[in-house]
Every structure is written in C-alpha cells, then in structure tokens.
Length: 492
Ligand code: ADP
Picture 1 (cartoon, protein in one colour):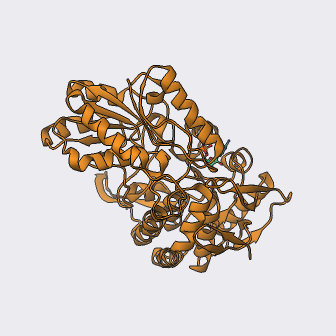
Picture 2 (cartoon, rainbow, N blue to C red; picture 1 turned 135 degrees about the vertical axis):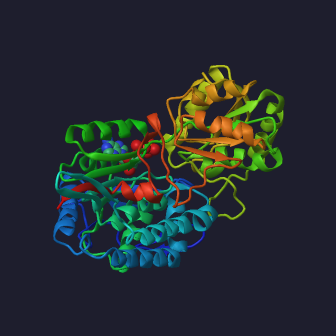
Picture 3 (cartoon, helix red, strand yellow; picture 1 turned 180 degrees about the vertical axis):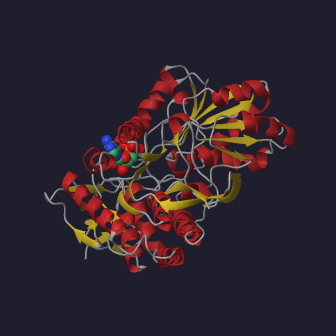
C-alpha cells in the first residue's frame, strides 16, 4: 500500500487506480499523471489516468448497474441506509480524507478537517434522508363526459450520470453530485480534478464499504482534455453535472444541446459584497475578509467585489488590510498558518498576471501583491481600491485578491452588483431590514447571504445564473435534478 507523507501525518492509501465496477484498475494504456504538493513542489504520487476507453468501460459499468443491478430497484429506505453508513465512514476517516485534500491542493488542514469533511458527511446524511421521500404530486381532474379523471406524477431516476468535479473542494463537491444522484437511484461515473483526486478515490472506497453495489459509482481520475472530455461527450449518459470554469461549462452545454441531455453547471462567479452605511462592521468585517481570503480566494462563491458606501469605504479598506496583513502564510498542515497555498504554479501565475493588470489599469494596490519568497505556491492576500470596469473586477481570479469599489446610492450599489456576466451569489451587509428587502429581489444572482458569507447548507439549493451556470444542487432542488418527472392522466 502506498504511503503519502505529509508534514503532519503519514496516510496509507490503496493504489491510486481507476475504480470501475467496484474494482481498482489501471488505465488500459497504462497512462498516469503526477500529483504535486503545492506547499513544497514535491511529487506526491502517480495516479492512473483514464482515457476514452476507460471512460467507456466506466459508463458501461454504470449502465449495467442501473439497468440490471440492484441499486435502482432497491427501496429508497435501503438506499438511504447505504448513504447513512457512508456518512459514518466519512466521519471515521475524516483525518485521512482531510490530509489527502490538504497535501494535494494546499487548503488549511484545520479547514478541511473541521469544515469540508464534516460538510461532506452532512451532505450524505441529508440525501440519505431524502432517499425514501421521493414522491410525486396527485390531483383530481374535471370529468370528461362520463369519464372520471385523476392525475399523478412519478419521479424516476434519470439514469447514468457523468459528474466532473473541481480541485478546490473535492470531497464536498463530489458529495453534492454523488449523494443526491445515488439517493434518486441513478448510477454515476465521476471524474475528479487532476490536481486533487485522492480524497475522491478514498470516498469511492468508503461508499463500497458502506454497501454500494458494484458499478453504482465509478471513478475515472484523469486529465480534463482526456478523461473529462471523453466523459462529457459520452453518448451513454443521461445527465452531466459539472463544477468548474465557464470555458469548459460552455463546451459541456453545447455537447448537451446536441444530445438533448440534461445538465447542471456551476461555473464560479465574481460576487459582490454590498456594504451599506448601517452595516454592523464589527461583525461584518470578519465575513467580508473571509469572503476574499478563505482558502486563498479559491472559492466559486468568493465575494471579491467589495462594493461599499463611500462614507465607510476607508473603514472597510482598513479592515481588509488588517485581515490581509495579519495572515500567517505557511505550511497548510501547521495549525498556526491562516493561509495555505494556491493549487498549482499555473494558477499562481494567473493570479500574478491579474495583480499586474490591476496595477497597470490604474487600480490602487493597498496591500499585498507579491508571491511569497519560499518554495511552494504562496501569494500574499491582496487588496485593491478600484472601479467595476477593471479587469480585476470583471474576471474571476480564483486567488486572494479583493477589489473595493464605492457607491453613493442604493440604486448605484444594485447597478454595480448586477454589472457582471456572472450571477452566483451576493452578500448584503446592513442592519436596516427595509434596505435588505429592497435589494434582495433586484440582484441577478442565485443566492444571497445577508450579514454573512457563503457557507452552504445541504438543505438549501446552491447555484447561479448567466455565466455562473445552470440548475441547482443541494436541497430538494438538488435531488429533483437527478429525477425525471412523468405525468400520468388516468381516466376510468
Ligand atoms: P479550473 O481551471 O478551475 O481547473 P476547469 O474547468 O479546467 O477549472 O476544471 C474543472 C474540472 O473540469 C476538472 O475536473 C477538469 O479536469 C475538468 N476539465 C477540464 N477540461 C475539460 C474538458 N475539456 N472537458 C471536460 N472536463 C474538463
């Protein structure tokens, strides 16, 4: 068994292989890719890299499990029991799962072990509870002549689902897709991101241990343009659910268009944090800063446009600067660190290019702006003052870079918030209920947090509009997204 050494613990894992039909297998052409620790740039391990043939085998296995296998035919209660057992096993393996996530993508270990992994088991528990409550509607209909009529709907599992996940919250986002899909009776082929696949492979093993029948969940680690592209284009899928960049999301949408296939897309954002003059800044500053710097800004719901009333702009900038300058940037396994790493060098270079662009377009760099001089991919939390037309205010940076923009009137604040191609989420900070109620319906976003930032709950839908994506995950909506509704008209 390979051992993954981290600066905190050593973790024994199974050989990092594809998981098809309940078994670990190498890629047919023997390809692998190398996982790198972003905190010190050392090699972690080589992982089997799925190609088109492997994806094909995984889709066939999922199809067989859906058509012939016990999963879709089990009672909802039985499926729920498997998902509940999976939640328990995730809890028991929290330290291991967290270490694998942190070593591969540099998020603070304390945040994975206290936040992401409990959230992952929470999602499995939530959907375990739904599995035996998938019901339709019924209604009596007006008589037609001598015939009485009655109507009802069935919600049936969609079939075989292709799921493609990102590296920033691998276990959580896998759970958002896999748990409701399985609860509904679907089977799944999951492609984790190449920068962080190990926790997903362990998750699949835990699901098997929990009693998931072979083939109900297949995992095809691999590169985006190879395994991801093969999965997204595979004709044997009934649905594709994807979290990642708008570039790939657009491609998946066009493929789905050709095939009349259902999709759910979550594609990130450039979310506004609207700070009104009556905001309780003592409480709000924590969330405003967290919305920019948590996980080094590598969060789709990050609130990177801080749109502040001009009368309190200096205070908010001071608060952000204090948060940025007090950050302890270092080994994500060290409990004294408050900022870990950027996932890889390409992403770090991208962030540095955006910072240069902010400077060259005339934004005022208030603090930060530098790569940290040590091995690994570390960058200082950065605060700009600027305007909404700057590139740094228009494009998703996926790094710890805040842009503070001022407004004078509520109408102007709303217009600035909506002046973006994205529409994932928005935050409103105000102690005036009238302002909050006035603003909520006017924001073109899928989710709003009032006096807080971005923490999901499995019982409430998650998702955006426009370039932020299509559809909803989590909650009842997230479950329904894996079912087909069938309407029945009965006459007698
Ligand atoms: P990011 O730039 O944040 O890594 P991506 O959209 O590139 O976002 O990656 C999100 C997921 O999509 C990853 O699992 C990645 O491997 C996958 N992916 C990348 N390119 C493609 C593609 N052409 N088709 C399908 N999946 C892809």
